Amino acid sequence: MVSSQISLRKKIALELFRKYRKNTAAVHSLDYIFWECTLRCNLNCLHCGSDCKKEASIPDMPVDDFIGAIDDVTGIVEPNKTMIVFTGGEPLLRTDLEICGKMLYDRGFPWGMVSNGLQFTEQRLVSLMHAGLRAVTISLDGLEKTHNWLRNNPHSFEKAVQAIGLLAKTNDVKFDVVTCVNERSFAELVEIKHLIVSRGVKQWRGFTIFPIGRAKQNPELQLSPLNFKKTFDFIASERKTGEIKINYGCEGFLGGYESEVRDNLFFCRAGINVASVLIDGSISACPNLRDNFTQGNIYNDSFKATWQNKYAKFRNRDWLKTGECENCEFFRYCEGNGLHLRDEKTGELLFCHLNRIKEGERVIAENRL
Amino acid sequence: MRLQLIQGFQNVPERNMIIFNSRKQFNIQHLNIAKMSSEIKKRWFTIQNKSISYILSFLGIGSAVIFNGCMYGSPAVEYGTPHANFMVTGKVTTEAGVEIGQIKVTMQNESIKSDTDGKYNIGVSDFPKDQEYTIRFVDEDGQQNGGEFAALDTVVKFTDPKFENGDGDWFSGTTSKTVNVKLRKKN
Image 1 (cartoon, chains in turn green, purple):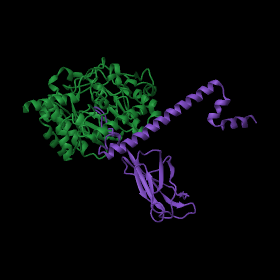
Image 2 (tube, chains in turn red, brown; image 1 turned 45 degrees about the horizontal axis):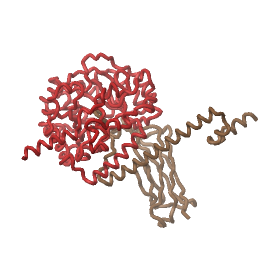
Image 3 (cartoon, rainbow over the protein chains, first blue to last red; image 1 turned 45 degrees about the vertical axis):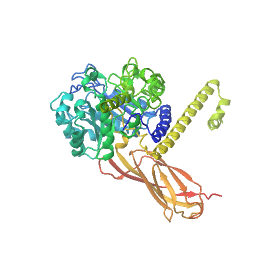
């Protein structure tokens, strides 16, 4: 597949989808809320985007403070259609997740969490389910050696696989596995697939590590242009086999790969449908968007009023048409990539998926010569 | 008498209040109209997006509009929530009470046709709480089955629903309502 070749059918779809995006930004319904419930973490991952530590400098947010913010927005959302996701740090380090979960459940909100699986036990899973847990994402970044290298812990693979096994035999919780593809795990993708399929996983999402947090200082975590392109070829090919439902993550306009490597066309919904309450009370879009992307703080501002009256820079992204985006023919479909790939202070684009794929295509072309 | 006046005043349509009330109230009313206009626009955009979704489906990219969660996010809400079945049963008749078969009955994304006795039974799975659905009745076969009838939308409200036969865990059970409708013949 070639990234710059977009079929007429796909072009029509992309043009229509532009209108869809604009309409969605205008409607601006809040459908997805992240809660960065802790910055504490029991791992010390090489690629962490949160800069988490075992002992966080900012204490965990009290449940009542978060619930107060949720109660504030209840009037403008349909609770049972609004997903709340606990993220971190490692959410399972909080012993009061069940209290928060139950309060959300009583208000009609489904909720889920993202976990590294290290503290995932059957007893805790049952306890969380009784508090309304509906969805879990487990990170598995490679086979044992690779996963433990990236996660910086000799037991992390074993625990993640155990958590996957537990979830696979549980009917009432939906789950998926997320893999951050890097140079080491790229070579293992087929084996990872076999492993997780054998453990009962039905949904698998792939991400590529982007230059943020600790990953910024560790360039070996980035895929080479060639393997970056090949990752998309792998996903496109696996989607055709139907052995497992595999999707690339939410980031990056991918040219000809659009609709071939994920169900949806590229659309960064940060601040359009997605909000976050960060550890210090900051109201943002995705948890990765901090600093200049912060729109308010639940300790000073109404979450509801912030959602209704702010988020202008998320809803109209014309301001991102600078730098390498300025003359890009695909800006109309991409609108400057995911906002988490923009420098938080300058807004500069840190990574263009399409250009990286094109680099990989050039490597292939040069090798053929 | 004063009470009657107040009650009468409260019944005056909202737009007319602009004429009678003070400048402050006019401004409030004006804001309400602006807000209403914004809501109408949002509804219009939502309708447009539904149409776009259909066209994208036709183009074979039907999942384009699905929101599968975000970076580090877990699967979207449709992956499962505590749920219950909301059933609506009833009979479709003419205004004179004659049963009409083959009327298409739609509830959210579900649709069925009424049987020869005009009976229908339709339901959806949803969050176990108060719910409201619009049930649409459409005559798709023209003059067949007793003539051509005008379409009808009926709102069914489930308030404080009682569920039966739940599994004691996430499936709360089933609740149902009977809604009999009379369709008007097209002239």
